[in-house]
Image (cartoon, rainbow, N blue to C red; front, top):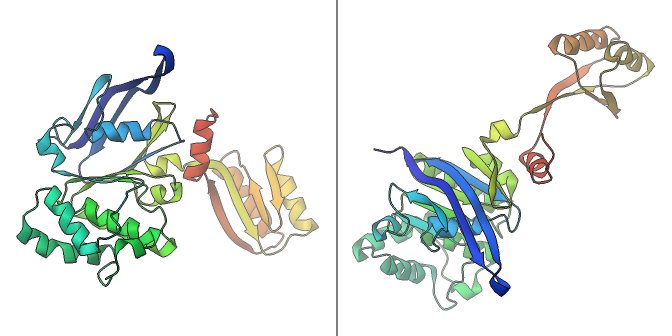
Length: 310
């Protein structure tokens, strides 16, 4: 039995454009998503993310290559029944209340009525809408997003495709969604997450792919993306001439720059760093913290899409 929820091999998609010209949306994309993981897809607008998701949902046909979801074609009806989807801009009928809407979506997905009767209250509780009695037209953007997430779970899917699931949510709402995604992963579900909020992706994803101009630019874990830069930030209680002299005596040609009471320092090696710390203790000065400087996912992403090697 395969350990992969999604497998994409050399996937390409070309669209016809004006006057018989063509536009290449995807070019040789390959990726693998393991079962029971949260996978993050990030990229600029126009990078090909939506096209890729459409093909993984069986809504678009690739020009070249192949994709498999749960071991089968995404267009297979039995595969589709095992998949849930939250689109970026989901239009909800104004006249529905939350329970009626989920009941309607359950019927569209072929879920048994008896099962739905048990499942709907649980889903509304999980997304924080258990007490809502208002029609959808009275919902805030955040409430609509929560209801959209509930409908993605209505068929008890094994794989979830979520397009900007925290869009419109306040910080507390985003945390609630993050917690829910982690719970779903613990239950063994696989989540394919597309989001522009890179801080959210960094917090929950097991693996991330950066899509750039229709191709995979980078693929790694968040820890590998947010690697150390080689710099250290050394915070001290106070900076005077003696402290500056101690630093200058050790730093030499190495990069060292004061930012108020914090020294940004790039040591040659660990011994060089410890030598500087020893000199500072001998001044003496109180060292408050020593922190390795790491790239954020956003910083790494900007370097990749701008063509700068990290």
